[in-house]
Length: 190
Image 1 (cartoon, one colour):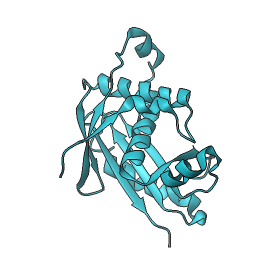
Image 2 (cartoon, rainbow, N blue to C red):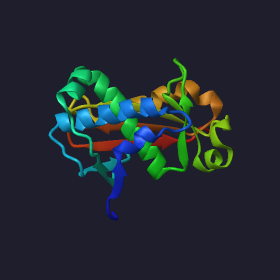
Image 3 (cartoon, one colour):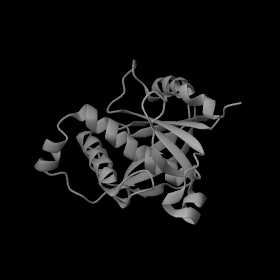
Image 4 (tube, rainbow, N blue to C red):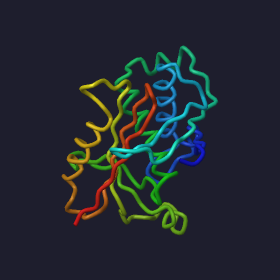
């Protein structure tokens, strides 16, 4: 494995075609709440694995301090885990794939986001309407033998089949905050 890829979580606040700056800021805050609740500090290493082996290692960085006000805003750690995992997933997709977030998916599609090619967004700005892939995200604050990221990843991969009629590749990212690590799996639709 090569050296760690440095990821600045504050990048979430820059916005993307399918993530406003304010929504991205929420994902940023939620991610650092989850990481600091597990006693991590900026610079923590995070392995990105498929179902079997490590694909990459990230160095997660942030500069914002978790104040009492921020803690009070995210007192529901289940919600923070969901939003923080989405933030981590967004950054992993940007860094390790050719995709970006195009838009939030509708309910009952089995996914959370529609993805577009980063190159298309650069060429066409925010007028990109063509979906290129799908993304389902899940988060675990602290896994246990009954709730592992690999088990959740397999379940979420099955869930993504609800939108297989699109014939687009499906990505599933499960972020776990206590270790931390990310399970990233994908499948093609034939």
